[in-house]
Image (cartoon, rainbow, N blue to C red; front, top):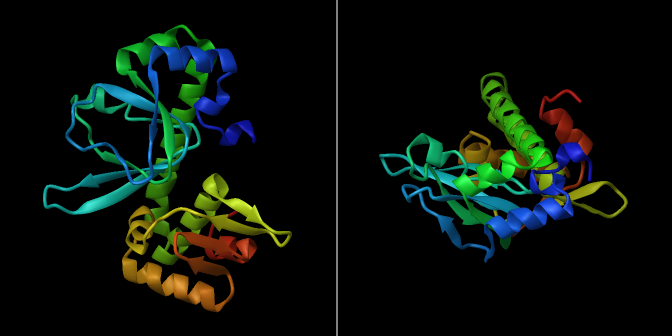
Length: 227
C-alpha cells in the first residue's frame, strides 16, 4: 500500500506498534457494537488496527447524522478531551474492529517519545483537515449526485476490493441509502434516483450490503472531479 494511503497505525514500525499496544490495551468490537456514545466522558482515544467504524451525531432536535467513516489505521476520539471532556459523537463498529484503546495522556507521552509516530499523526491530521476542506468546497460547487459519485469512488479507494480483470470495484460495507445520503450531504431521494440511473446504465450493481462499481471511469467523470 502506498504510504500516502496508509493511516497512522500503518505507518508505525513493529517496535512502535508494540510500544503503543503496551501503553494501552487492544480490544475487539463486533460489527454493530457501540464503541462510545455522544456525551460520554472522553477519557481515552482509539487507534484503529483493522476494520471500519461509523461516526454519528444527534442534534438537539433529535436528528441523527452519519458524519464520517474511520478505518485504515485512523486515530479517533482524540479531540473530545481537548474540547469539553465529553464525546462529541457516537461511534459504532460498521465491520469487526480491532483497536488500541489508550488514555489521552499516555498517547501524548507516546508521541513525545517517538518522532516517527508524531510525524505520522501530523500527516494523518493534515490529510483529514484537507479532506474536510475539500468536502465543504464541494458542497457549494457540485450537485448531490456528483457528491454521491465522489463518495462511492472514495469508499472504493479506501475500503473496496478489485473484482475480476475488468476493473470492477466492490464496496462491501453495510451502509443504508440514508447513511450514503448523510455522508454525501444530499437527500435520500437524490441517492435513490442516482443509484437507479447508474444501475440502468450499467455503471454499478447493488446488492444487500454491497455496491459494485462496474464502470469506474464513467462514474469518476460523472463526479466532476479532475484526475
